[in-house]
Image (cartoon, rainbow, N blue to C red; front, side, top):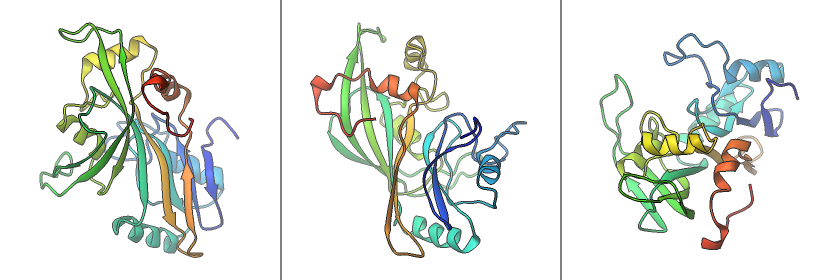
Length: 240
């Protein structure tokens, strides 16, 4: 695999799921600001054929990205995505310890800059592990963090990031909706990326009817953040 190639998690003649690295934009847009390196371009070169992106990930988010090789497949997967037939699970690390082990955020969100209309938005969260680190925060000598599984039921603009902000459990490394003090603490630990990773994607293959599941391993920097969590406080989920 060349340096610019993306890790392929699963693929056949009709579709593929790849592991997008953090920091890489999916495609050109108004947010690109002169950038010329995009996942869509890399994937066209990598597979040697046209690609049709079924969904998007934020530039700072890593993990499972679904694409099709023809318009028919892309359209079928898009309909499945809109109807809720595609399961998406993310790993996120946030500040603080949520009061419940599993909970749902039901909080309407606008569509981002220039799109003020708010629409329903729901995200299911589950606490996978917690830790308390010897890093001062405000009036406290230590700081608490939680490792979450986030499963969005809708697909609004920066939904997981904004729902965590709504709870005051800001996503670590998020420079737009996060908490700068905690972001700086993690940078001192050598962790500079936003800690949101599209861990798992599951859907029905539009041609075979079989259930397809892809799981993306986290990169080294995200794994370093996960290593901060003490397994003695609870069982780890599947290993990285």
